[in-house]
Image 1 (cartoon, rainbow over the protein chains, first blue to last red):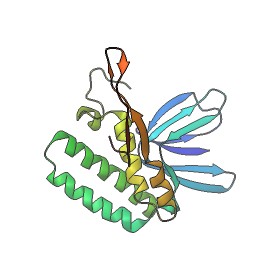
Image 2 (image 1 turned 45 degrees about the horizontal axis):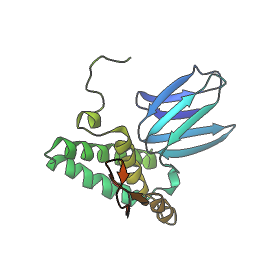
Image 3 (image 1 turned 90 degrees about the horizontal axis):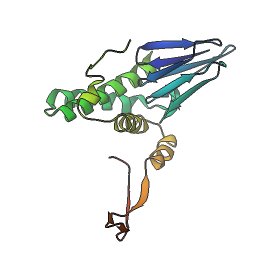
Length: 112
Length: 71
């Protein structure tokens, strides 16, 4: 079973799942193989669940959660939170918001 | 589930494309990696390509562009 961070919320996928295409948000993908659990942080992307119970998860970056450095994550979160406060154009606000979303998600992945 | 004529995600409303959004997210994740994974990942951001403009059906002299990603 896998759990993917869809934009509509955490989505659990078991064999026999209805064919679905889900857009992913930055977050943790959990893979359960028997009793083994692996967690990967996915930067964004899509999950395709096919009718034959094969699921493809496409992401530009997917890293094991323990490859993330929590100091860098917290520094980045503080930096983007500050940028969000001082942003003026729509584009600056959007970039700062993306930063806050991505770094908060990495932070939750490390502390959760 | 789909709404008609909605603004969609905030980055789309600000004029960004999905590809730009996705690449920015990936870049942020790469910058938070521990070594040696970080150096390996930053290699993936590098771009190196040749580009030439076409005028009157003929290509002009190509120029090489390279760098660490971005737009």
